[in-house]
Structure formats: structure tokens, C-alpha cells
Length: 273
Image: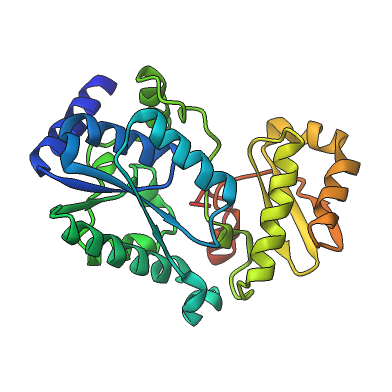
């Protein structure tokens, strides 16, 4: 079944003729960019959007992966904080962010004579709170992984089979997801979160989030790592405070993708983080 889905993905890409892949260096977009470059060759480009809502580590890792896999990589700057609708951080925040990005990618594609813009949405994303999907539809962005019926774990399995370095990479999300809806997103706030997460990563933690609640940093750690985080609590607290927070707290429920979205429904179901 997995081989069939991958063949379906490759056939879909072949039929497109040319493609620009919205590339972040994450598990999904890396598999998509890899398959597209194999199938389309020079008629494919991967475009990495850089801005203050993406960590320096993520951008550097994405560049390194693109070089390792031989992608034709372009970079563009986006300016989410210039849009007051994004800054106010409503539940539709992602829509405004994706609208800007997809509009810019469409311009880049046109400039390079490329017909289609692709993103890495997968079959698990349809159940999530994702206003960015609306923006994708408005700009006629294609989601080949979703069309092929590929789920997140299948994408990881395929990536491992293909020898991609991202197959076991922790889930990523822009730094804006660290703030409760209604809490304005600022340069200072993003910098605090970025510094805190870089420090926790330096302590050896892999899958976690630092959620910003004013002066309180609520650290969500994957359940399998919660004991380790607790054992490191003094170092974790010090790192969080050094980043600019006054208080550090560890979430007793642990990390779960999309936890900030649960306030919208009152449920504990998984959503996009």
C-alpha cells in the first residue's frame, strides 16, 4: 500500500510538468520536495520562506537538508508582523500568514515560468483547525501528499525507506503557535520563545514547546521525555528565565500537537500545532 501511494504521488507530480514546492525542511515538505525534484528535475524549485516566526535552527537545518539532497533552493522573506491582523492573533491568524506566503510563492512561480505551487499538507491535516487551507485553496495551491492519501506516519516511513534525514525529525510549527489566541504577537515575545526553545534543545530535549502566557513559560514536553525534563528542572527553569520569562512551569499533560487550538472546541483532540 505504501509503495502504491508513493507511485501515485510520483505520477501526480509527473503530470504537473513543473512545480514550486513550499519548503520548510520539515518531514512533509522534504519528502514532497525530494519526490518532485526526482520526477521533474530542473522544472522544480523548492522555496524556503524565512521570517521572525521561524527559528534560526529550523532555517539552517532546512538549508543543510536542501544542499544534502540536491534541491534547487530559493529563499524569500515574509513579514507577518507587518500585518496587524496577524499580530492580534485571532483564530484565523494562520490564514493571513498563508495568504501572504502563497501570494509571494505564486509570484515567484510566475517569474520562473512554473505552473503549479505545492504544499506539504497530508491526509491527517483535514481534521485539524487549519485556516491556512482556505488560503491554499484561494491561490490554487496543490497538496499532492494529501491527494495521495499519505498520513504522517506513512510519510515518516517513506522518508526512512528513501534515506531522507528528516524521517524522524520532531514536528515543527511557527513560533506564533506558542501564544494563546488573543495574546498579541510581538518581536520581543517571539525572541523570548526562540531563545528558550534553543536552550532546551541544547539540554537534549527533542519534542517540546514553550508556550508563552505573559511572564509564565509553560513547557510542554513529549510524555516519553517528561521524566527527563523533570530531572533537568533546575536547568530548564534557568534556561527559561535567562530567555526573559519570570516563571517556568512544566505542563503535566505533556506535549500534544495543537494544544492551543483545544480552547476553540473545548476538546482534547489532536490538532495542528
